[in-house]
Length: 321
Ligand SMILES: [Zn+2]
Image (cartoon, rainbow, N blue to C red; front, side, top):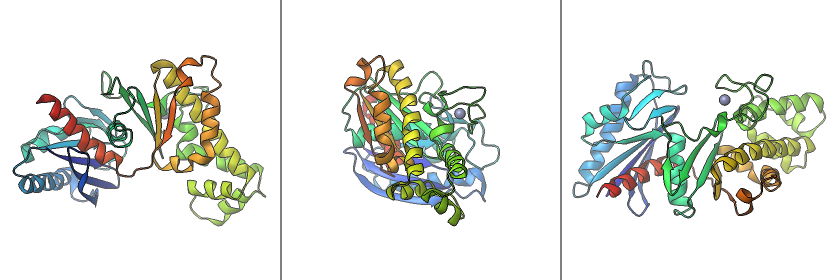
């Protein structure tokens, strides 16, 4: 069996071809390209799938699609997404359209959810039964593996750990989703930037403040570079990030009693600065049982979204046989 994984992003779409052993046979990356519209975009993806079908004519080809936003995974519909700039793609029937163009019914799910499956298959090799994967970037997403199966919930929105509340919902910082006090408003890149700007005003002589002044565009990487130089402000910002993230993770673990938590996404690159603070929160909970044997890991694999989409399609199709 051959799995084609499609990872649709706001800027790029990534395509992966994988075998049952989890080996990447081919990968391609193309700009999402909004100019020619949504229909043309799916036609390009379908052309790739049809090409793979031809090349592997002696094998069954299956397809998984990870889409950003609110996905109805049962019907393969992208209900809503704030990041894709195509017009009129709310309630976009991705699975129906791709099936019509390729003859293959794809498995469509939220991109962070499928990335979680990618982590489970290719990083953890299915070790562990109950796994939380947190994707740290501009947004803070998540995915859940419960009893060794991908858990998507009643509507397909399970794992939205970024929008669980960790502070006052009336006075807390504003999140991209419109609410206040979300975890993402503290540990997403916009939340980290806000705390950097506050800190820089209070400590204008700090190494971080000097760096921010020099650079035109603020990048999270600046905070790591300043921390590397021992800047107390930068170290404090990472420590606070770990503290807030720890509260968010503890909330999920108290509800679901996970055995493994994996942090992934761009911001996880700074884990060495914030991980001790995460551990400190987790290992000092009043109720200790869910945390005593909890494994906390970091995985930085840029392929994980597409790999997860392909491996999930293979896994689901093999189960049918
Ligand atoms: Zn939110």
